[in-house]
Amino acid sequence: MTVDLRPPDEVMRLNRLGAAHPTRLSFLRALLRRVEGEGWSYRCAAWEIDAEGFGHAVLTVVAPANTYSLVAFSTPLADEMRTDRVIAEAWDTSYVLYDGIPDAAEIARLRANAPRQEAGRFTERDLVLARANKSVRLFAHVAESLANGHQPDADLLASVGYLMRTTAVYGNGKFGIADRDRIAGRAELTGPFRAEMLAVWLIRAFTLDLVEHVAAAQGGARATTLDPALRRSLGVGNSTGLGMAPFLVRHPLLVHRWFHARETALARVRGLAAAGPAEQAAFLAALEAMRQTVSRWHTEDPVQAPRVAVLADDLAALAAVARRLLSGATPWDALYRHACDGLSVEAQEAVVALVLEPHGALVDDLAETMQADEDSVFRIDGTMTVGALVARLAVHYGWVRRFDFSDPASEARFWYVSEEKLEPRLGERGAEDGADREQPLAVARDVSRLEAALLAAPHDEPVAAFLMRHPSFRYVVRRVQVAIAHPYAEVRDNLVAATMRPVDLLRAKLAFFGASRFDPRSDRWLRISLFADAPFPEDICRRETERMAS
Image (cartoon, rainbow, N blue to C red):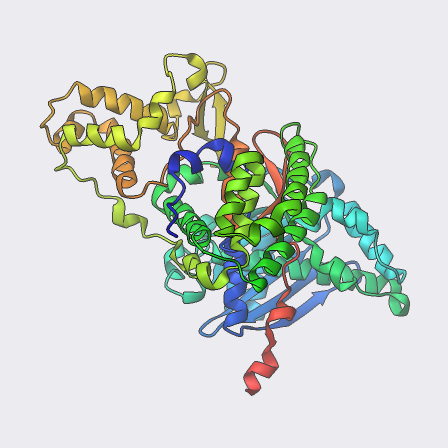
């Protein structure tokens, strides 16, 4: 059976983007499959950490063609200086993903600069820059418990889910580190955010090694290590705010590739005629694992908390009918339709992730299609006529007509860049300064204005001539021309409306990273977990000495 991809008007709405779940196509999952499939090796190249947990470590992975090292620094931090805000100037830990294995001189250079983060100086050998703070009470509880020879409180671990929380993971040339072009041709890093995901994976390994090291120093012979199941349940936390939100608007071609890959995977699976015993078992196991994850998903957000409760009930209801649906014709389509007919949007998107899980052989290739050469669509087709562009707007941007921009509530906000931190921010129009420096992220409004201007222009006029008279529309014309061939390029909602929740944009992007346990702290920032329940380097990598001997 052939199943059509879900239409962009359904997929690219904020209410559904804000219910996204990680799938097997998520970037961290794709990275780990490559690490395991290519037989990467791993070793701790340096561990100069004192009894209190301060010092530096170097964790090294060797891919078929390149070697990468996480250089980690752990430093004392006064409680009053510990904050997740981007304006912080000191952190418990700081990191650089280094291209190769650093020698003593390079480690000294990084020690002088990495703890300063954006105030430091970096080179093209530095691929990713990151920092993180401890979940102080939980880190101390785990260290003390292990030092005394017993396991920490499992419920307390589950309620938080991580011992270290990153407050930034920078790549792509920021603050002087290597430009993306330097590593884009490397097979192991060609997928989106692969270098950043590699850094976070190694940060997780360092974090768990660090707490066990502190426990061993405190407890001596009576100390123990974390139970493997508890250890694996812990991820890396992350606090993410408005700085990430505009990404889904600024990279239309890349965003199309992400969503098109996921929707293609879903259509492939829904089109299968039957479910074999192995696939049924894998689905049921994934469903049970998701139910366990949701049971540990704690948030006090007044919007998300009720959604999590409903999701738990929906997954229980799905479990009650799953075996029956799996035994029938076109079972994966039946599961998805069952979700659409009676379950919440949160549960529908969970089912998207669940039905992909048993079908790696069918869909995993799509993870390698999610990168994009954005320069390839930068040039505007100036030969297109005004009439042709108006016709394309009607087809691809008809959704814009849902919004009445004469209503002040439809244009209540504006996006701008903070002069202090060079980070995106969201202002209240009419109540805050900065609207004169508004960023071009109000796509729906600007397309509406473009259409009005085009209707007043000669029908047969070339777009090039139109833009000579109206240069302010260049960016939106480029967007429209990209979306003509790439239907998932656009978030089909009003991103400056009074009711818009930026966390919906954040969750959509972070789900593609592979994040889970979304915990909004307001409508503008949230906390997540990365790599929870994922293998550690020692689980899927060979020891470097074994690789070198082979």
